[in-house]
Image (tube, rainbow, N blue to C red; front, side, top):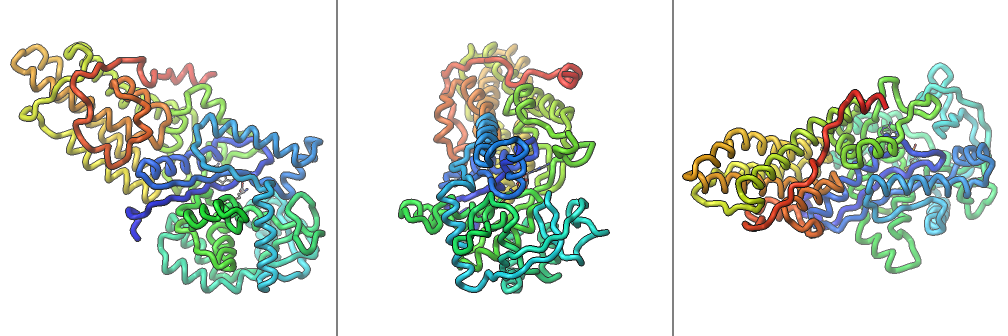
Length: 524
Ligand code: ME8
């Protein structure tokens, strides 16, 4: 089946640790997944968008201890803050899974029991090195100068009775799957990393701990709790009703599994492209279609981290610039799949250039002219006066947006929409409606030019639906269209030219994005 034929779409974000408030980097993953989910709804696919929180493990337990409260109370507080942030960013998730929920814990225990029964999990003794911040065990041979090979921090010696999962048993099957499904791990640079990691040989994975208690108990050995990754990764199936007792929920699983996209940051690629597929093979389930590892938002001072004190709070940016500007910046500025620099200056610049100048001016100038030359109503186009230019470009842009979104190339999709916006602005310059208005013989041409601009804006508004939650409604409202009707718009309708009805009153409102004075904005 090709991408175009698919009727359902299941997309996930990582489930975020509930040990502290989220920053703009976490918001980036979730906003990107939201745009992809909204786009697939716009295409008319039944879409399921899952996000949630990873609430067990020593990190969360320690954070709760530091705050002097029970871990459950601690994570409840953090989760409330995360939900508020998603509300402000208008994240359209269909479900929010918390790993402390009974519906999740039951599945974790069931999966663990099954692995044990079929001999994939065995009990042994672990002796090695452990990196607490990364929650990862390392063999001596993997350490770099005696430190964690991932983060470079100190590791500690650990000896502990643990359960292990036989990853190596599935290694060849996984390699074959990756070779036969070139789209499975994306972008290709990450696929190559994963393949060479697997080829080094997979060690059995430690899947239980006895040194902390905040987790899902191993059902047949309650001194052990299930170690984070089996607990965390399982969310992608527990949330949609895998092994549920409720037939309605099991139907959801039948409908949506396998996931179309697991969207994750590059640092957790190994868990999603190696461990998770192996767990699924052991369960006899099909593998997700794509695991996409996106890059990081980095600051001039390096990676954002609490300890460096350089985290960017998305609430502050939303207060200052509004949710549409923040989302637009994240989606447009960062090449999807690679690292991208975050700076507030770049955000201000993007807002001013793309949103205030290009898009805002196209709408404002068009409506000003419609007010002045057409009595604030949509004029009637005249067929033999039509150059078909903007209509033709729109017919190219819609499939371009579709291709880019199918390839998970979000910035390219926005670039395509802006080709239309920019062409609209050129069209004004090239046709100089103010000159046409001076010549009564050019009335038909003037009406046609204005109509074409209005239709272009109608289409641009609809094309922005996956990316910006407010702007499409504002554009449609100013064009005299019912913003409520946007909910029913489908991608295939957008390029259909001639939807605006002549005679409809337009309403020039405030400019969509007032220009920001960079000096003033960046000083506060
Ligand atoms: O890893 N730039 O949770 P987490 C871009 N619980 N994305 C960033 C980022 C940055 N600077 N910082 C974080 C965990 N992210 C596990 C996941 S999944 C079964 C379990 C994003 O709270 C990125 O998507 O540390 C990364 O993968 C995720 O936040 C990590 O969130």
